[in-house]
Image 1 (tube, helix red, strand yellow):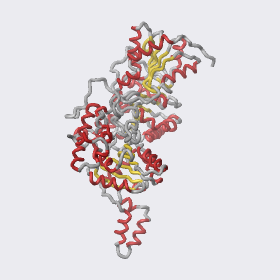
Image 2 (cartoon, rainbow, N blue to C red):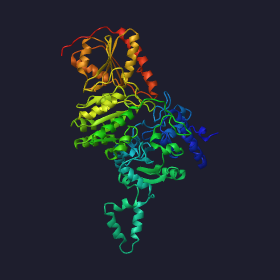
Image 3 (cartoon, rainbow, N blue to C red):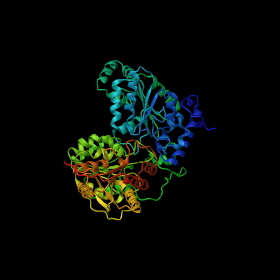
Image 4 (cartoon, one colour):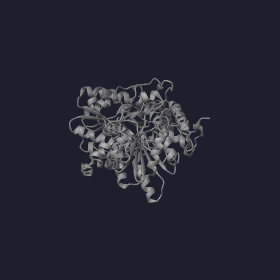
Length: 632
């Protein structure tokens, strides 16, 4: 019987021998590879952290001790150890277990995570709550070196060192986030990998220097006054020591004896401790090790070859953006590109290859990326900021204060807008329309298809003002609509189909379902109008007023939050024009959308063409003409 089949809780790990732990590690890797090959998921990071996760659960006592995994994409072993082994094949599927920690799923998931660099802040909060209630359990934050490039992690380190509460931070150092790590912190950690561990720095230094006859004591006092120079020369991890942490490491993430001794030492010490553990992404599976960016978050693949299973489909929006921005940069040497540790994910790998000196990966630091772009724009460059919709939320103040307020020509390209699928609620790009359209000076666009995305990339470059373009994950629709692509004009939509019974106003990737639904509505005896809004801000007031004066019911369609989104923009504009129209708003509800394949989620949420037809035909007979002009 496999050892893995006997593991039902962390307690089952306590009595295993070293030989059994090695066997269990291999079994877990095989199980992870098997499930991710079918469901997709975060493979490389989980293959690297197997032994470390087992060691953590052998030393600490979950759920009494609270273990927080940063980002959370590295929690697959944790899930299997904490009673979810039988559910593990449902990973990232509709109704299955999440690919990230969820406290509603298990008491062993101490904190919900999905975005980077939050673990130390959350862990310190739990530690302070523990201290407030005079409790004694341990708090552990497991953070990768990629997440350590995020400023939030350093804000938390600074506060934790100041407070001095008992806290264990485990730095899982594998030299990678999604793309290879960049920046001074990455170089610092790389240097530490080459150094031995010193647990008694001051005592060792004092002993050695004072052995020098005649001058030893005086020399030691002089050296101590040199602003800690020798501390940095002789001791790895002094950056963390200066933050107020006891630094232990670096140690191998595959030596059970060393890990458990070190973790036990950290557990039993008073005050904040940082344990630096060296691991490698993709361990035990050659294709993952050789293609780390691909296997960070991968779709279904063949285990024997590592070949990702893909059906023939049109180019992705990401690829179309990447190709087009290279073309724009070839014509304008002022164009530079910025991303936050997602070169491949945002399609900027081609730009980086073509213009290495004009490409800037800032690490997982979205706020810095935006203000960096603002500074570049102020200096005369034309910066492109490509970040996933859900991650750009983290830089909201910088968009407002540093870009929009001074009206600087920064171009934002928001990949993964709308439903992203199996990564679930932390990754759905639900809120971009709501949080962007309130910002003055900012133009907000959404393309109907990949052809219009190409046009919007070029148009954004030509505007010389703040612009945001949001587009979905995955392949484009593959075909353009019957009408030719019209030239873009700020704040002007396009009519794709004329009609008189109702007006369908669609935003971005909802244009194609609206077009399909309209064709079905014709079969129901209706004559719908279909409008591609193109611009969420500024809204096409002139076109809307023409529709309102025709007294047509209006349906708005968006793959974004209804609260404050595109439909809200239409209603607000209509009110400003002095009308109170009959409007059915269709979009994402005021709740977090679960994980699942995008097609499954759209059907459940009523966003596919068949559901749209049912919702619209059910709504129309219940409405009586109540349109009226109001005094303004």
